Each structure stands twice: as structure tokens, then as C-alpha cells.
Amino acid sequence: MFYYVAKTFAVGPAVNAVFRPWVKGLDNIPAEGAAILASNHLSFSDSVFLPVKVPRPVRFLAKKDYFVKQGPTGWVTRKFFDITGQIPMDRSGGRASQDSLNAGERALREGALLGIYPEGTRSPDGRLYRGKLGVARLALRTQAPVIPVAMIGTDKVQPIGKKLPSIRRVGVIIGEPLTFEAYHDNAEDRFAQRAVTDEIMYQIMRLSGQEYVDKYAADVKRRMESGKG
Image (tube, rainbow, N blue to C red):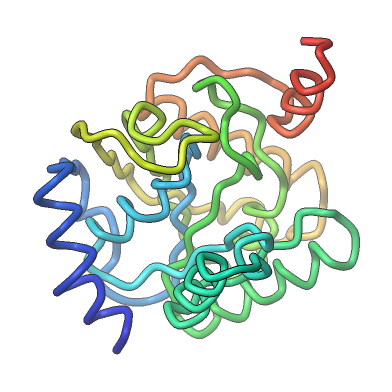
């Protein structure tokens, strides 16, 4: 109820009036049933613009840091993510990351529309980076269709490190659902997961027009922060 009220009467009208986001391919999202929205990730505001334009509630696998922020602003952020049903994603790897994916899997088995950023983090420079295998694991285990999504121009609205967004128009392109029946019997095979992930990233690249880099965005960020690249 909170999600519906906030989107319909507060966040949605404000975002539509100020940023006038356009959308293409909205009819590619099923009216009901489990599906995965796999999107490029250019800005924190991606998690605002996409749900505003999608009729159904979207539950995101969101960075765990948003759920543990301190102070008044952190409290508001934590409450908002919690009340709207977002799922904390631990990106440290190992058991913690697997537990986060398990929560996403449960949401899909309940028929949710799950949002995920396969790159694992925001692009440091506007290019599209190698996808992590989590999206393929979820797709193959649940057999939910994967819908590729391209966010357009959100990095100009709110680049990394900028708290207040600039006012300019952004776009959302939603591709046709992808199903991977040929891999359903090999859901735990890493080669199958890599093939599925790469196909998803190719479709996102095709929609977004971004340059593709066959490296993980997190590794590139670490190199940039250390002054090595």
C-alpha cells in the first residue's frame, strides 16, 4: 500500500513533472507473474525512474549499504527501502551474497517483478561492463523470463558522487523477454550461467548503445581509485 501511495500520489507525479522520463517497450513487461528486469546501472536515480514508469511494483536487489546508513537521512533511506519491499544485496561474495540471491529467488517464486543490475555496481564512466552470474542463477533456477532494460541519460542527471540531481530528461528502453530453456537443465553449471549472463548483457548493450567492456566494473573502480587506470 505504501509503495502504491508513494508512487501514485507523491514520487511518480513529481518525477514525471520535473524530469519527463520517456519509455519504450512497456508492453514487454508481463501483467503478472515472475520476471526479472535486468538493467544497466548509470546512477542511483535508476532505482527511481524505472519503478515510476513500470506499472507493477518492482522489488530491487539493492546495495546493502542503503539499509545500514546512519543519521536522519540514513533512517529515511532505510525505512523507504524496507517499506517498499527492496531486498538488501550483500556484494562481499561467498555465503553473504548467496543469501541475498536466495532472497531474490524467493521473491520470484512468489511472482514478483525483480529488478537487478547485473554489473553489480554503477558504471564508473558510462560504459557497460561485464555482468556477474547472479542474474543467470536466478533466471535458470526460477525459469523466470529476463527483460533487458536500458536506462538512458541518468548518468547526466545524477553522476556518481552527486547528491542532488540535475533537471533534464531521461529515458527507459525495455526489451523483449529472454527465456533460456536450453539451459534449464544446467542451472548450476557456471559455463551455462556465463552464456546466459553474456546474452543478457549483449541485449542491454544493444538497447543502450553503450560501449561494452569485458571487465567487472568493481575492478575498474578499484583501479581508478588507486590511480592505476
